[in-house]
Length: 160
Image 1 (cartoon, one colour):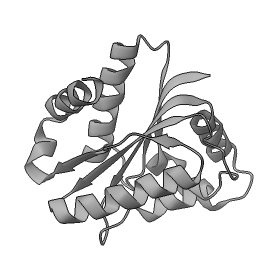
Image 2 (tube, one colour):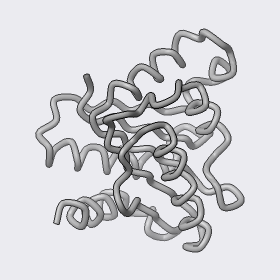
Image 3 (cartoon, helix red, strand yellow):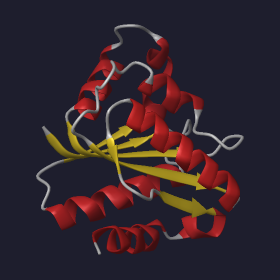
Image 4 (spheres, one colour):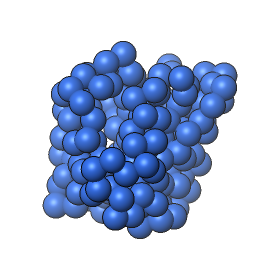
């Protein structure tokens, strides 16, 4: 069982969304004394994401289901989470995240869009059985220049 699993639902590798999610995962893993941090970058799954029985996608789904704490990050597209993230999560069975603590992370250019997308993502994670934290992390435009600081502030607020 993985202590902390980070899922980045950005369609581009190396995105600021991935950087923020990884920084948050590292910070939380360190604060929890986690033995393992796993990062699932959906952009790396490529076309296999759409193929039933794809090995890499199957492994990613197993990591997600084995998480103790799951950080799910997405950019905002038209006030919602990314399509590639939805495709991945739609492959999970009902209640696949039962017993998993989940943190939604949303990046956007406008706070209003981030808030709507964060609420939608939190609802999706809850529908999959996860226990979702009371407030997810939203980061807007310029904040993404320093993901470590954003992750530190959020972790401090979450723990206190």
